[in-house]
Figure: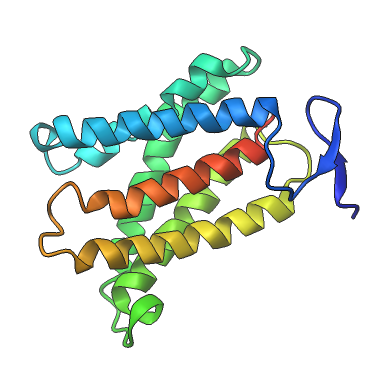
Length: 197
């Protein structure tokens, strides 16, 4: 497989190159802005929404993408960002919390908290990328980028949960950004690199 590929704009470029073309940049900026909406809502209204507030707020992450995305396959995009990502987030969190019940030992990424977060991060990545692929929203043959993205997001999930739980008051909202900010921004990058323009 050649490292050169034709992007959605007809330009040859390195698939794994760190740069973003204009369509990818637009996607990344929209999702980064979506993270800011998500974080702002987390600080302002999360307490009033109850225990599952985080899942109700998840659609805010992808909402700006709908405003800048092409109108082609808009129904599929709307389903993914408004319902699909929240459902995957809920499922990944539930499975990760169940994995916490198993007796693991060690420190850092091998601790039960770190492993729990890594499991949640991996499930979130695979579920979200899989949903996009199932609905035909991904570019042709993005396998390497999806694999790298899944590994990175798994690691960020483990690191984020570990840092979050090291806080004196992990039930507070501010420490949750240890988990969500790096994960959502990395996810935005990998989604920008793999979504069809």
